[in-house]
Length: 310
Length: 57
Image 1: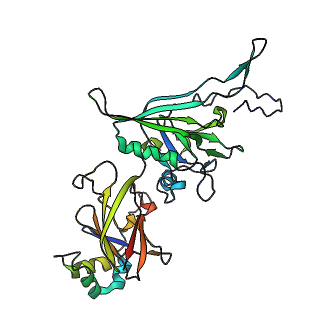
Image 2 (image 1 turned 120 degrees about the vertical axis):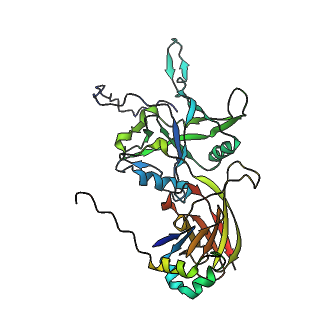
Image 3 (image 1 turned 90 degrees about the horizontal axis):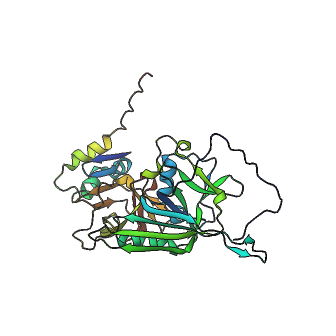
């Protein structure tokens, strides 16, 4: 993008208040999210929002992935650098700036395998997205909206997003390197920071984690119940090594009848053995039921299973 | 209200509506070898835990 002067010729004053931001951190983590949700609403933090734990949980656990926040933490070997402006030389040897240099991010997730690489790769396939950067003082950086009433994610050039797997060796753990360019329309001058002390006391964005995907197999399906076996869906191949999802309760689940459009009140959930859940529900006509985690439960998992009852 | 007994969490209203007879039929295999009469009674008679008094109030 060229230099976007607004043409009014007005300089900005250069006085500096005592209380000021003394620099923007390199990212320690990211929140990745769509720029605009499927329903057309922008994903943004309003200046009037209260950022407390419930605020973060609601976004982390959102059932609509286009509104969900996806957390990536503990970035290492980070370089977040903007290249010099492009310029053109004039006949008198002076130069004129033409296009701002691209800002590029490179960083690594250490002790990670291709399973995590697979998760990161998905972001280049799902529509325009951006990131809020998380600094190591538990602050959050985004891009101010034009009217300065909202903090938007900093848009990423999704065509530039890629990951590189380094396999484990004697010298190092396995790592996943992430590299991308920020969208060229993003201006560093629009960046703004929400500091930890502007969030509700006790909130620490560096402690947040993304949802863990769960795969479900169902059996013994009747009009009054079913059995669901829940396993963590990450990097285990053999049935014997896959990790059971344990400790979920009735209040962890949301069951919805997609045929009638009504929620189902679950009568009981029994976990026995670990990771195997027997559901009892009121008798219903043949239908397709949808099982998801209940967002308000904040159990840290994501799953969605359609169950056809007789 | 949700009532947890052992490894099962029950919706109290749903169990009350079920009644003891249907409860015993439904949970005969799920809660095998357990005292279903006792469990039914525990579920339907469970009360909300009392909130602790605020100190200094």
